[in-house]
Image 1 (cartoon, one colour):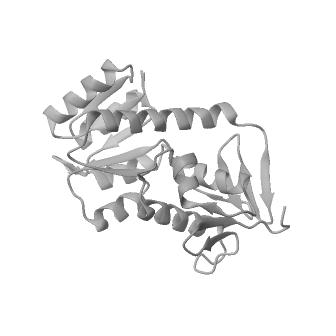
Image 2 (cartoon, helix red, strand yellow):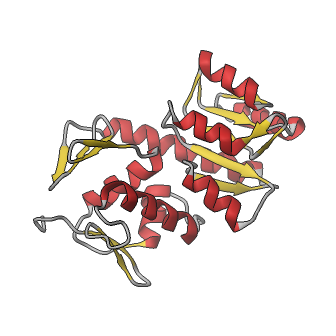
Length: 231
């Protein structure tokens, strides 16, 4: 069976309430309360998005995220009462697409989830056979693959969307606000989240991530993708 959203959280009352609320607004949602239950669920079902708590009764959401990322490239939103910068950085570095702190507003969380679902649905609808090549970098927009000198580079859905937006608007300054509005579609995304995703992209496609030649920082303004031929 296919769901819009899977909630993985050992706080049963909160998870059940969130699941019920989402279903009430026609976001087909299922819930799992443990790492083991979620792993088994994903063997037999599909989902378009995952809400994942860090502290699970039988393990860590961080470890589960790493496991999920070996086979799935769907959006993963961490939802946790842990609010340190270290936790947020770890979550994004291991493949999380966003980090939401508890307690949360059901309405705000539902809005964020719907935006995510619409955005990644839109990526599928807009996908064409277009292949972007820039020196050794090759990005297949339709199949969502990235290679450098023929070597596959693994990106999360959010990282791929961010790269595509930078490429589509290459050789011009793109402000942080524009990226928040058009990639995350969320004005409340933090600079820290964007910075981590930019760093991950550089590590994937730049020959020297510390001295990038493609994804350039424009101090205090935003970023610019610079193509080799300037086109």
